[in-house]
Length: 521
Image 1 (cartoon, rainbow, N blue to C red):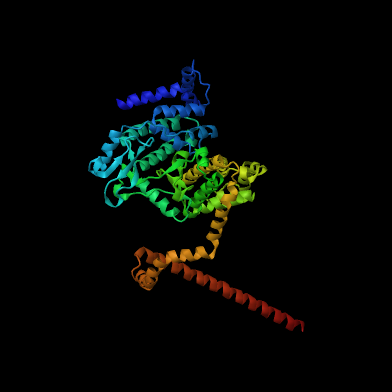
Image 2: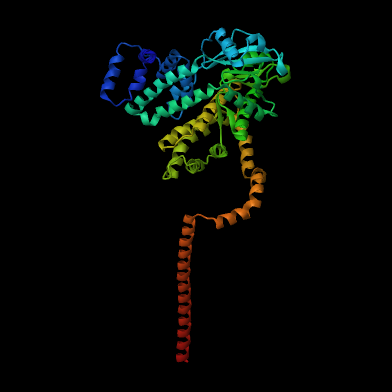
């Protein structure tokens, strides 16, 4: 019954915000087209479709807001205006009662709240669709007296998520079957991707491990602070971390009044991102202003503070090489190389013509070179390449779409801070350094060192392994070897016959030449 009421409410919101016009207009069935005309009578739908979609998702609640946020990362599937509107979705969610948060903490730690904290702020400092955060001070142990931030999952999130996800899967199936764009938009795959994101964010231990990895990677860079995770107090639904003291990055006037070097802050943000991408292949993938602060602590003044590590992106060595070479070829206007990279990656069908793909890429990239480099958006270039590649049936990799979304966030933050930011000149050293490291002797030595323990074990045992293999090879392998040997003998006999025949032919020619000369003489 609950699912029925929830479904009815969703239908009401769809009609209220005119999403039927946005969604049903692409359906092929004539009855659905007629229904679209009927339900749209008498409604005032002056707002743009993307705005109506965003407002409807906010009306449907936290899970649908989160779905819209994830959907905004799939710019390879959405029209640009709708993707831009969905990117504006923020977790403006009312906090749940503090008593519920306290009960969850006591349940996780198995002891009263006062036994864990000397001070606990009942009013949350932040509230999002999945969890909310309270400031506190630890009581005992090696962290006694330390100021911390306590993140607590919303209650009963799993059951709420499963109900809404089941409805989303149902709607995705209808869209895929009935809509003309259903197969291209891959609604069921999008819902499955959202399902993965949500379940990952519901495990705060996973988020804590992401934060620990980023903190370890960023040590020594002295540009960004990652809160320390206090593992003695981390559970799947409660996470305790070091409290950070900073101002949100979008409060530019307040930062400037404190003496923060704003242009340097913009450059540092780009440096942090490209270091995470091209050096580590492990990057914070949810870098909107709500998750980024700037330290005002005298000891770390002016450094970035990263928060909320539920979504991180990972890149393989192949992904990094693909990206670095694409960016480098783009700025050299080597469109043929960009096309070849698309084909070499295996994401384009092998029968794709290089010249056709090159022409399409040139049409995307060439307009950017009429502008100064500082006005070129790498995120927009990557997005346009993805959209163009759709014509050639490119299978876009999720990690690259996540990277493109994060790159757009970084560019937006950087240029809000400093409109004169030259993103390419900031990124170029990382690309060049990475390319040199990939083909230089240093990379070869690193690979040899990495493989050395494996081969150190294998080499002494190699003679015995070869002997055992030859001594106890399977019957099928023996038969194949016998067949191979028989064919080899037959080939050898054929080659011998050809050689002897050739020799005989040459001897015959020589004898004929001698006889002719004797007769002529």
